[in-house]
Amino acid sequence: MRDSEATPEIVTEPETGLAHFLPTQTISFTDSHGIHSFTLSPAKRLALVLSGILIAVWGVIATVTVLLNSSADNQMRLRSAALTLAYESRLEELRFERDMLSAQLGKTTERALSAQNQLMAQQQSILQIGAERQEMDTQIGAIERQLEAALIDRDDAARSAARLGVEISSLQSLMTERLGGQKDEVAVVTSMTTALADAVQDRDMEQAKVAELRTELDNLELQRNLNAQRQDRMLTQLEDALSISLVPLSTMFDAAGLDVDSLLANVRQNYSGTGGLSDESAEALPEFDRRMQDIFGRLDEVSSLQAAASSIPLAFPLRSGYRLSSSFGPRGGRLHKGIDLASSLNTPILSTADGVVRFSGTQSGYGNVVIIDHGDGYETYYAHLNRRRVTVGETIARGDRIGDMGNTGRSTGVHLHYEIRKDGVAVNPMTYIKAGRNVY
Image 1 (cartoon, rainbow, N blue to C red):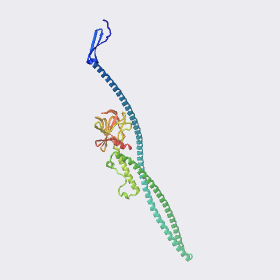
Image 2: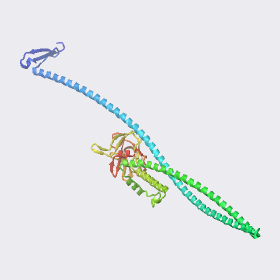
Image 3: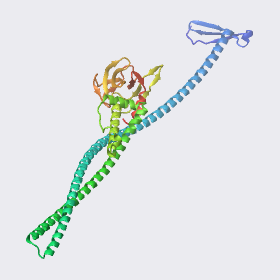
Image 4: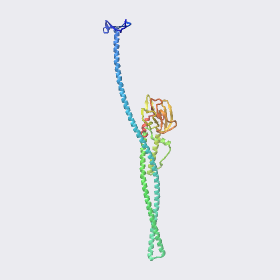
Protein backbone atom coordinates (compact mmCIF):
# COMPACT_ATOMS: atom_id res chain seq x y z
CA MET A 1 0.00 0.00 0.00
CA ARG A 2 1.42 3.37 -0.95
CA ASP A 3 1.54 6.31 1.45
CA SER A 4 -1.21 8.89 1.05
CA GLU A 5 -2.63 11.84 3.01
CA ALA A 6 -5.39 11.01 5.51
CA THR A 7 -8.80 11.66 3.97
CA PRO A 8 -11.52 12.14 6.61
CA GLU A 9 -14.87 10.46 5.84
CA ILE A 10 -17.92 11.68 7.78
CA VAL A 11 -20.78 9.19 8.26
CA THR A 12 -23.93 10.51 9.83
CA GLU A 13 -26.17 8.09 11.73
CA PRO A 14 -29.75 9.16 12.42
CA GLU A 15 -30.59 9.54 16.09
CA THR A 16 -33.42 10.96 18.13
CA GLY A 17 -33.50 13.65 20.94
CA LEU A 18 -30.35 15.69 21.15
CA ALA A 19 -29.16 13.89 18.04
CA HIS A 20 -31.88 15.70 16.12
CA PHE A 21 -29.87 18.93 16.52
CA LEU A 22 -26.45 17.42 16.94
CA PRO A 23 -26.49 13.99 15.29
CA THR A 24 -23.77 11.48 16.03
CA GLN A 25 -20.88 11.69 13.62
CA THR A 26 -18.16 9.20 12.86
CA ILE A 27 -14.96 10.57 11.45
CA SER A 28 -12.66 8.15 9.57
CA PHE A 29 -9.36 8.73 7.86
CA THR A 30 -6.70 6.52 6.35
CA ASP A 31 -2.93 6.83 6.38
CA SER A 32 0.03 4.56 5.81
CA HIS A 33 -0.86 2.55 8.90
CA GLY A 34 -4.43 1.82 7.97
CA ILE A 35 -7.90 3.21 8.53
CA HIS A 36 -8.68 5.15 11.71
CA SER A 37 -12.04 6.38 12.90
CA PHE A 38 -13.65 7.92 15.97
CA THR A 39 -17.21 8.79 16.83
CA LEU A 40 -18.54 12.13 18.10
CA SER A 41 -21.65 11.62 20.17
CA PRO A 42 -24.20 14.45 20.52
CA ALA A 43 -22.92 15.14 24.05
CA LYS A 44 -19.33 15.42 22.84
CA ARG A 45 -20.41 17.65 19.97
CA LEU A 46 -22.35 19.82 22.45
CA ALA A 47 -19.28 20.02 24.71
CA LEU A 48 -17.12 20.99 21.74
CA VAL A 49 -19.60 23.70 20.70
CA LEU A 50 -19.85 25.07 24.23
CA SER A 51 -16.05 25.02 24.56
CA GLY A 52 -15.76 26.94 21.33
CA ILE A 53 -18.32 29.47 22.49
CA LEU A 54 -16.53 29.87 25.85
CA ILE A 55 -13.20 30.28 24.11
CA ALA A 56 -14.67 32.93 21.82
CA VAL A 57 -16.29 34.78 24.75
CA TRP A 58 -13.05 34.58 26.72
CA GLY A 59 -11.17 35.92 23.73
CA VAL A 60 -13.56 38.85 23.41
CA ILE A 61 -13.38 39.61 27.13
CA ALA A 62 -9.59 39.33 27.14
CA THR A 63 -9.32 41.57 24.10
CA VAL A 64 -11.63 44.18 25.67
CA THR A 65 -9.73 43.98 28.96
CA VAL A 66 -6.38 44.43 27.23
CA LEU A 67 -7.74 47.39 25.29
CA LEU A 68 -9.19 48.95 28.46
CA ASN A 69 -5.97 48.39 30.40
CA SER A 70 -3.95 49.82 27.55
CA SER A 71 -6.19 52.89 27.48
CA ALA A 72 -6.00 53.24 31.28
CA ASP A 73 -2.21 52.88 31.15
CA ASN A 74 -2.03 55.54 28.49
CA GLN A 75 -4.21 57.82 30.57
CA MET A 76 -2.11 57.14 33.65
CA ARG A 77 1.07 57.80 31.70
CA LEU A 78 -0.36 61.02 30.31
CA ARG A 79 -1.53 62.07 33.76
CA SER A 80 1.83 61.14 35.29
CA ALA A 81 3.64 63.10 32.59
CA ALA A 82 1.38 66.10 33.21
CA LEU A 83 1.93 65.87 36.97
CA THR A 84 5.68 65.50 36.46
CA LEU A 85 5.75 68.52 34.18
CA ALA A 86 3.69 70.57 36.65
CA TYR A 87 5.89 69.42 39.54
CA GLU A 88 9.08 70.29 37.67
CA SER A 89 7.62 73.67 36.72
CA ARG A 90 6.64 74.37 40.32
CA LEU A 91 10.04 73.14 41.51
CA GLU A 92 11.74 75.52 39.08
CA GLU A 93 9.56 78.38 40.39
CA LEU A 94 10.45 77.46 43.96
CA ARG A 95 14.14 77.37 43.06
CA PHE A 96 13.83 80.80 41.48
CA GLU A 97 12.01 82.11 44.55
CA ARG A 98 14.65 80.50 46.78
CA ASP A 99 17.44 82.15 44.80
CA MET A 100 15.67 85.50 45.10
CA LEU A 101 15.17 84.99 48.83
CA SER A 102 18.81 83.96 49.20
CA ALA A 103 19.89 87.11 47.39
CA GLN A 104 17.58 89.21 49.56
CA LEU A 105 18.89 87.44 52.64
CA GLY A 106 22.47 88.21 51.60
CA LYS A 107 21.60 91.86 51.07
CA THR A 108 19.74 91.96 54.40
CA THR A 109 22.73 90.41 56.16
CA GLU A 110 25.06 92.94 54.54
CA ARG A 111 22.77 95.77 55.58
CA ALA A 112 22.61 94.40 59.12
CA LEU A 113 26.41 94.17 59.33
CA SER A 114 26.74 97.64 57.86
CA ALA A 115 24.18 98.95 60.36
CA GLN A 116 26.08 97.34 63.23
CA ASN A 117 29.34 98.88 62.04
CA GLN A 118 27.64 102.25 61.74
CA LEU A 119 26.21 101.80 65.24
CA MET A 120 29.65 101.16 66.66
CA ALA A 121 31.17 104.09 64.74
CA GLN A 122 28.39 106.42 65.82
CA GLN A 123 28.73 105.23 69.38
CA GLN A 124 32.44 106.10 69.32
CA SER A 125 31.66 109.47 67.74
CA ILE A 126 29.05 110.24 70.37
CA LEU A 127 31.44 109.33 73.15
CA GLN A 128 34.11 111.53 71.57
CA ILE A 129 31.64 114.40 71.17
CA GLY A 130 30.59 113.93 74.79
CA ALA A 131 34.19 114.20 75.89
CA GLU A 132 34.66 117.29 73.71
CA ARG A 133 31.53 118.80 75.17
CA GLN A 134 32.77 118.25 78.71
CA GLU A 135 36.13 119.82 77.80
CA MET A 136 34.34 122.74 76.16
CA ASP A 137 32.12 123.21 79.21
CA THR A 138 35.28 123.33 81.34
CA GLN A 139 36.81 125.95 79.04
CA ILE A 140 33.62 127.99 79.05
CA GLY A 141 33.53 127.86 82.85
CA ALA A 142 37.14 129.06 83.04
CA ILE A 143 36.47 131.87 80.57
CA GLU A 144 33.35 132.90 82.47
CA ARG A 145 35.38 133.07 85.68
CA GLN A 146 38.05 135.14 83.88
CA LEU A 147 35.32 137.37 82.51
CA GLU A 148 33.86 137.88 85.97
CA ALA A 149 37.31 138.78 87.32
CA ALA A 150 37.91 141.12 84.38
CA LEU A 151 34.57 142.81 84.97
CA ILE A 152 35.47 143.30 88.63
CA ASP A 153 38.86 144.74 87.66
CA ARG A 154 37.20 146.99 85.09
CA ASP A 155 34.71 148.27 87.67
CA ASP A 156 37.54 148.87 90.18
CA ALA A 157 39.51 150.77 87.52
CA ALA A 158 36.47 152.82 86.61
CA ARG A 159 35.85 153.69 90.28
CA SER A 160 39.52 154.60 90.72
CA ALA A 161 39.42 156.82 87.63
CA ALA A 162 36.27 158.54 88.85
CA ARG A 163 37.78 159.10 92.31
CA LEU A 164 40.98 160.50 90.79
CA GLY A 165 38.95 162.74 88.53
CA VAL A 166 37.12 164.18 91.51
CA GLU A 167 40.37 164.74 93.36
CA ILE A 168 41.97 166.45 90.35
CA SER A 169 38.97 168.72 89.94
CA SER A 170 39.22 169.68 93.60
CA LEU A 171 42.93 170.44 93.30
CA GLN A 172 42.41 172.45 90.14
CA SER A 173 39.80 174.54 91.93
CA LEU A 174 42.12 175.03 94.86
CA MET A 175 44.99 176.12 92.58
CA THR A 176 42.75 178.57 90.82
CA GLU A 177 41.80 180.16 94.14
CA ARG A 178 45.42 180.50 95.20
CA LEU A 179 46.47 181.97 91.79
CA GLY A 180 49.15 179.68 90.87
CA GLY A 181 49.52 177.66 94.09
CA GLN A 182 52.62 175.99 95.40
CA LYS A 183 55.08 173.60 93.85
CA ASP A 184 54.00 170.70 96.03
CA GLU A 185 50.44 171.18 95.00
CA VAL A 186 51.49 171.21 91.33
CA ALA A 187 53.40 167.99 91.95
CA VAL A 188 50.35 166.44 93.58
CA VAL A 189 48.19 167.46 90.65
CA THR A 190 50.75 166.08 88.21
CA SER A 191 50.88 162.84 90.16
CA MET A 192 47.12 162.63 90.27
CA THR A 193 46.91 163.31 86.52
CA THR A 194 49.43 160.57 85.81
CA ALA A 195 47.50 158.18 88.08
CA LEU A 196 44.29 159.10 86.33
CA ALA A 197 45.85 158.46 82.93
CA ASP A 198 47.13 155.09 84.18
CA ALA A 199 43.70 154.27 85.58
CA VAL A 200 42.04 155.19 82.32
CA GLN A 201 44.55 153.07 80.42
CA ASP A 202 43.94 150.13 82.78
CA ARG A 203 40.22 150.59 82.35
CA ASP A 204 40.57 150.56 78.57
CA MET A 205 42.76 147.48 78.70
CA GLU A 206 40.27 145.72 80.98
CA GLN A 207 37.41 146.67 78.68
CA ALA A 208 39.36 145.33 75.68
CA LYS A 209 40.05 142.14 77.64
CA VAL A 210 36.39 141.88 78.55
CA ALA A 211 35.40 142.35 74.89
CA GLU A 212 37.90 139.69 73.85
CA LEU A 213 36.61 137.28 76.50
CA ARG A 214 33.04 137.96 75.45
CA THR A 215 33.94 137.22 71.80
CA GLU A 216 35.67 134.00 72.80
CA LEU A 217 32.73 133.07 74.99
CA ASP A 218 30.29 133.72 72.15
CA ASN A 219 32.38 131.54 69.82
CA LEU A 220 32.48 128.72 72.37
CA GLU A 221 28.73 129.03 72.93
CA LEU A 222 28.18 128.84 69.16
CA GLN A 223 30.46 125.80 68.90
CA ARG A 224 28.69 124.17 71.81
CA ASN A 225 25.30 124.75 70.17
CA LEU A 226 26.58 123.30 66.88
CA ASN A 227 27.96 120.28 68.71
CA ALA A 228 24.66 119.87 70.54
CA GLN A 229 22.78 119.85 67.23
CA ARG A 230 25.27 117.37 65.81
CA GLN A 231 24.89 115.19 68.89
CA ASP A 232 21.13 115.32 68.58
CA ARG A 233 21.23 114.21 64.94
CA MET A 234 23.65 111.39 65.73
CA LEU A 235 21.61 110.25 68.70
CA THR A 236 18.46 110.26 66.59
CA GLN A 237 20.17 108.21 63.87
CA LEU A 238 21.51 105.80 66.47
CA GLU A 239 18.08 105.43 68.08
CA ASP A 240 16.50 104.75 64.68
CA ALA A 241 19.19 102.20 63.79
CA LEU A 242 18.68 100.43 67.10
CA SER A 243 14.94 100.30 66.50
CA ILE A 244 15.54 98.81 63.04
CA SER A 245 17.91 96.23 64.53
CA LEU A 246 15.55 95.27 67.34
CA VAL A 247 12.44 94.75 65.19
CA PRO A 248 13.66 91.74 63.11
CA LEU A 249 15.26 90.10 66.15
CA SER A 250 12.09 90.43 68.25
CA THR A 251 9.95 89.27 65.32
CA MET A 252 12.22 86.27 64.80
CA PHE A 253 11.99 85.17 68.44
CA ASP A 254 8.21 85.68 68.47
CA ALA A 255 7.83 83.57 65.31
CA ALA A 256 9.89 80.78 66.92
CA GLY A 257 7.73 80.95 70.05
CA LEU A 258 10.66 81.95 72.26
CA ASP A 259 10.41 84.11 75.38
CA VAL A 260 12.61 87.14 74.80
CA ASP A 261 12.72 88.08 78.49
CA SER A 262 13.94 84.65 79.58
CA LEU A 263 16.56 84.63 76.79
CA LEU A 264 17.85 88.04 77.90
CA ALA A 265 17.92 86.94 81.53
CA ASN A 266 19.87 83.81 80.59
CA VAL A 267 22.41 85.77 78.52
CA ARG A 268 22.91 88.38 81.24
CA GLN A 269 23.36 85.62 83.79
CA ASN A 270 26.08 83.95 81.71
CA TYR A 271 27.73 87.22 80.66
CA SER A 272 28.13 89.49 83.68
CA GLY A 273 29.66 92.49 81.89
CA THR A 274 27.94 95.81 82.52
CA GLY A 275 28.00 99.13 80.75
CA GLY A 276 26.22 102.41 80.25
CA LEU A 277 25.41 105.05 82.81
CA SER A 278 24.27 104.57 86.37
CA ASP A 279 20.54 104.16 87.00
CA GLU A 280 20.74 106.30 90.13
CA SER A 281 18.65 109.48 89.88
CA ALA A 282 18.16 108.97 86.14
CA GLU A 283 15.41 111.58 86.10
CA ALA A 284 17.86 114.19 87.36
CA LEU A 285 20.30 113.58 84.49
CA PRO A 286 20.52 116.02 81.57
CA GLU A 287 18.61 115.10 78.40
CA PHE A 288 21.80 114.08 76.58
CA ASP A 289 22.84 111.74 79.40
CA ARG A 290 19.34 110.25 79.62
CA ARG A 291 19.30 109.55 75.90
CA MET A 292 22.79 108.06 76.06
CA GLN A 293 21.69 105.86 78.95
CA ASP A 294 18.73 104.66 76.90
CA ILE A 295 20.95 103.99 73.87
CA PHE A 296 23.45 102.04 75.95
CA GLY A 297 20.57 100.00 77.34
CA ARG A 298 19.20 99.24 73.89
CA LEU A 299 22.68 98.43 72.58
CA ASP A 300 23.03 95.99 75.43
CA GLU A 301 19.65 94.49 74.53
CA VAL A 302 20.64 94.09 70.86
CA SER A 303 23.95 92.51 71.83
CA SER A 304 22.20 90.18 74.27
CA LEU A 305 19.60 89.14 71.70
CA GLN A 306 22.32 88.49 69.13
CA ALA A 307 24.25 86.45 71.68
CA ALA A 308 21.10 84.46 72.46
CA ALA A 309 20.30 83.95 68.77
CA SER A 310 23.81 82.71 68.01
CA SER A 311 23.19 79.46 69.94
CA ILE A 312 19.63 78.84 68.68
CA PRO A 313 19.37 76.80 65.42
CA LEU A 314 17.54 79.41 63.33
CA ALA A 315 19.57 79.18 60.10
CA PHE A 316 19.13 76.76 57.17
CA PRO A 317 21.60 73.86 56.85
CA LEU A 318 21.97 74.20 53.06
CA ARG A 319 23.04 76.99 50.71
CA SER A 320 22.43 75.14 47.41
CA GLY A 321 19.35 73.82 45.60
CA TYR A 322 17.26 71.23 47.45
CA ARG A 323 13.89 69.50 47.58
CA LEU A 324 11.88 68.93 50.75
CA SER A 325 11.33 65.17 50.42
CA SER A 326 9.76 64.57 53.83
CA SER A 327 8.28 66.84 56.48
CA PHE A 328 8.25 66.69 60.27
CA GLY A 329 5.44 64.63 61.81
CA PRO A 330 3.76 61.21 61.59
CA ARG A 331 5.03 58.97 58.81
CA GLY A 332 4.27 55.27 58.40
CA GLY A 333 2.78 54.99 61.87
CA ARG A 334 5.82 56.60 63.52
CA LEU A 335 7.00 60.13 64.25
CA HIS A 336 9.42 61.48 61.69
CA LYS A 337 11.56 63.56 64.04
CA GLY A 338 13.04 65.89 61.46
CA ILE A 339 12.87 67.02 57.85
CA ASP A 340 14.50 65.43 54.80
CA LEU A 341 16.23 67.70 52.30
CA ALA A 342 17.21 66.03 49.01
CA SER A 343 20.01 67.34 46.81
CA SER A 344 23.09 66.12 44.98
CA LEU A 345 25.83 63.96 46.50
CA ASN A 346 28.40 65.82 48.66
CA THR A 347 26.30 68.99 48.92
CA PRO A 348 27.85 71.06 51.78
CA ILE A 349 26.04 70.71 55.12
CA LEU A 350 26.28 73.77 57.39
CA SER A 351 25.81 74.24 61.12
CA THR A 352 22.64 76.20 61.91
CA ALA A 353 23.99 77.77 65.14
CA ASP A 354 27.07 78.08 67.32
CA GLY A 355 27.86 75.06 69.46
CA VAL A 356 30.15 72.16 70.33
CA VAL A 357 30.23 68.80 68.50
CA ARG A 358 28.80 66.19 70.89
CA PHE A 359 28.93 63.21 68.49
CA SER A 360 30.56 62.53 65.12
CA GLY A 361 30.31 58.93 63.95
CA THR A 362 27.83 56.28 62.79
CA GLN A 363 24.53 55.29 64.39
CA SER A 364 21.96 52.67 63.45
CA GLY A 365 19.52 54.12 60.96
CA TYR A 366 21.27 57.50 60.83
CA GLY A 367 24.45 56.27 59.16
CA ASN A 368 27.11 58.97 59.34
CA VAL A 369 25.72 61.56 61.73
CA VAL A 370 26.94 64.73 63.44
CA ILE A 371 25.25 65.96 66.64
CA ILE A 372 25.95 69.51 67.86
CA ASP A 373 25.15 70.76 71.35
CA HIS A 374 24.17 74.45 71.24
CA GLY A 375 23.50 74.89 74.96
CA ASP A 376 20.27 75.81 76.75
CA GLY A 377 18.88 72.36 75.86
CA TYR A 378 19.24 72.70 72.06
CA GLU A 379 20.79 69.96 69.90
CA THR A 380 20.83 69.49 66.12
CA TYR A 381 21.23 66.21 64.20
CA TYR A 382 22.68 65.94 60.66
CA ALA A 383 22.23 62.36 59.39
CA HIS A 384 22.95 60.16 56.33
CA LEU A 385 26.16 62.11 55.60
CA ASN A 386 28.59 60.88 53.00
CA ARG A 387 31.46 62.48 54.91
CA ARG A 388 31.88 64.02 58.38
CA ARG A 389 34.20 67.04 58.60
CA VAL A 390 34.20 67.68 62.38
CA THR A 391 35.33 65.83 65.49
CA VAL A 392 33.90 65.48 68.99
CA GLY A 393 34.61 68.50 71.20
CA GLU A 394 35.22 70.86 68.29
CA THR A 395 33.73 74.34 68.63
CA ILE A 396 31.49 75.24 65.69
CA ALA A 397 30.12 78.60 64.52
CA ARG A 398 26.93 79.17 62.59
CA GLY A 399 27.56 78.55 58.87
CA ASP A 400 30.60 76.26 59.34
CA ARG A 401 30.70 73.24 57.01
CA ILE A 402 30.31 70.13 59.15
CA GLY A 403 29.82 67.44 56.49
CA ASP A 404 28.72 66.40 53.00
CA MET A 405 25.29 65.11 51.97
CA GLY A 406 25.13 61.36 51.38
CA ASN A 407 23.04 58.18 51.43
CA THR A 408 24.36 56.25 54.44
CA GLY A 409 22.29 54.40 57.03
CA ARG A 410 18.60 53.61 56.48
CA SER A 411 18.12 55.83 53.44
CA THR A 412 16.47 55.47 50.04
CA GLY A 413 18.38 58.25 48.28
CA VAL A 414 20.84 61.09 48.69
CA HIS A 415 19.43 63.53 51.26
CA LEU A 416 20.01 65.18 54.64
CA HIS A 417 17.93 64.22 57.65
CA TYR A 418 17.92 67.33 59.88
CA GLU A 419 16.58 67.38 63.44
CA ILE A 420 16.26 69.95 66.23
CA ARG A 421 15.79 68.71 69.76
CA LYS A 422 14.93 70.89 72.75
CA ASP A 423 15.58 69.25 76.11
CA GLY A 424 15.67 65.89 74.32
CA VAL A 425 12.30 66.35 72.56
CA ALA A 426 12.18 66.64 68.77
CA VAL A 427 10.61 69.88 67.52
CA ASN A 428 9.64 70.97 64.01
CA PRO A 429 12.76 72.47 62.37
CA MET A 430 10.65 74.48 59.90
CA THR A 431 9.32 76.60 62.78
CA TYR A 432 12.84 77.81 63.52
CA ILE A 433 13.89 78.02 59.86
CA LYS A 434 10.87 80.17 58.93
CA ALA A 435 11.45 82.37 61.99
CA GLY A 436 15.09 83.03 61.09
CA ARG A 437 14.88 83.23 57.30
CA ASN A 438 14.63 87.07 57.29
CA VAL A 439 17.65 87.40 59.57
CA TYR A 440 20.01 84.53 58.67
